[in-house]
Amino acid sequence: MVHFGNTFVDTMTQAKAHHELTKLRMEGGHIDEYIAKFERYVTMAGYGVNKPTVLEKFIKGLPNLLARNCVKMDNPDSWDEWKELAWKCQEVYLKWRQILGVQDTKKEQSSSKKKDLNRWRQGFNSKRTEKDPNAMDTTPGCTCARRMTMEE
Image (cartoon, rainbow, N blue to C red):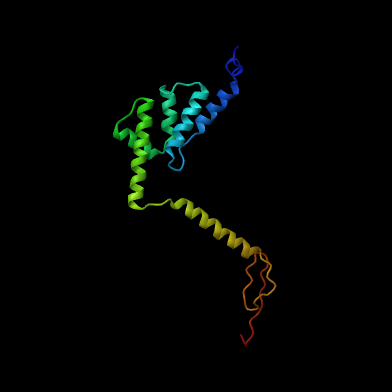
């Protein structure tokens, strides 16, 4: 008896895998996740991992500095060489970050910016009933001028 999955091939699976493969980038320093996804999409698309165009997609998905360091270290040619070297270079990079005490500041900065923006919006949208009579009104379109008296 022939298995249904082996008899009928979903052509959209290959197209989806190809599309995902072109979009795939290593994010957040997660080399293992990137390699696993890359291998899965290559298999689903029906490609060979050692083909030059496939290796090129893998290299373009790496951060520029990581790809450059791989080439400087050993100038890999095959899929296995690229995979191993990318993993080693990323491990060295993460170890140096740990030794130097470098943390991911982009996430912290973006979250603090969001907090500041939310505070600003809350203050701007709040309905205050008390207004300081001596405060200058800076609301756009609501400019009022008055003469100064001798007492002021």
